[in-house]
Amino acid sequence: MRKVKNPQRQEWEAIGIERAKESRGSLGLGVGPISDIFQIIEQQGILLIRYPAPTGELHAFYAEIDGFPVIYINSAEVLGRQIFSAAHELCHFLYDRDSLKTFLCNPGGQNDKEDKAEIIADTFAGEFLIPKSGVQSVFYKYFNNTQMINEVHVIKMQHYFKVSYGAMVYNMFKSGVISGATYG
Image (cartoon, rainbow, N blue to C red; front, side):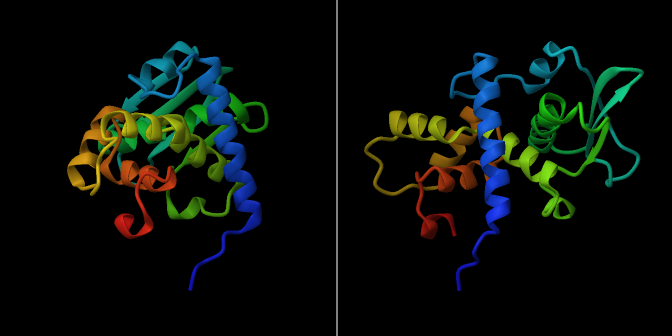
């Protein structure tokens, strides 16, 4: 039985996708890979702190401290997770900073499944780092005549976009590059 998505969640995800496209456009990023998300954050005038958290519970946060924007990323996590967390917190800075001053986050985590701001930020991060149109464009440019997609294709795409293997497979599926059967 196929699980039907909550229409409200779909609306929030659409907002995240639109915000990612808008932000990539305003930053002049096109649809290709992000070379350095941490540099993009610092160019926004945000103090970026990458430091190991004392526990595995703290992944990232956005806060304003004395009116100054700060993003913290737990550097004890794998780089792919840090990159996703950074894009997630960038969304909070760009779109949520006026409504809330602090966001303690577990980007992509189980506790964020029903929180509107977190769903939007997670979706933003995915589309910002790996835009659907970019995945399609790059894949068909380099692998146009591919009959059977395998792990090597995913790894090449993963390295091109500088994201985790799991994120790349998921986005190749969402982009229609691989089928549900291949994704499974």
